[in-house]
Length: 329
Image 1: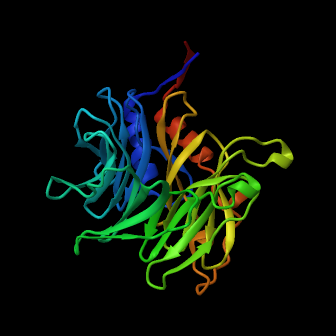
Image 2: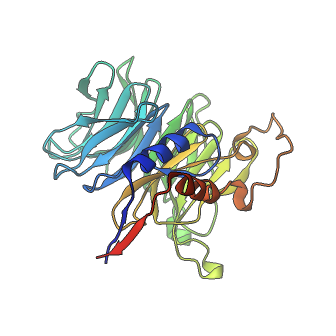
């Protein structure tokens, strides 16, 4: 059974433009192609994602300001697990058999290879000139890095357990880590400061925390199996402000995977409509502020500090005079 929603294109465009132009916390839809879109990343006005419209996983992008969509890779092999900073997009690429890390300059329209080691390199992330990834050259997976301007590679983690899914912002690298798994059976989120060479633990919860992403002081992750104590076994997206040490709940609905963050916008893959789509949520300033800048008194925004856009959506429907048809196949 598949729920199909047919809505007038004019109304959808109006809603899309309205949602992108507002700073009201809430979520909005970015992709509608039936081929399946997954694993989003965002920088500025550019959102990029994995796209299967051509039969294999390619990389596409969308400019949120112009609403223009564009392809980044079209190689017949799969390109997956992408990341973006400025004009540079990086991903893991299967064209050589074992996965390597490749990159693409959006402005110059030039593709380039980053890793050539014969072992597997996966899950790249980028900030400035630094690209980080999971590397299996030592047997267990470690986190490695590469400086694009200096063309130098370096190792970040040496713990004998598994480290994967790195994310980076300025000097801080975060990843999910299984070093405590043999004891409590779950993954945790760890971090590393490239300047001070210091490692630190971010999550200590009883559930599994994976797929971290970082922007500024905010680290978000996917929390597996929800709240077992109340019988909620769904996956959720949580976050923490490293400056204030306060943890918060981002997503309560849908079926989220692979979250990403830029400024106060969180995006993720979601299969709530039976097809994989990209959703987003705007975080309120009460969450994103640093410890050095106290929040001003603001009206109550409801549960979890997020303003619901349901009333706004209904108002647009009434103004447009459009009827939405729901049909099950």
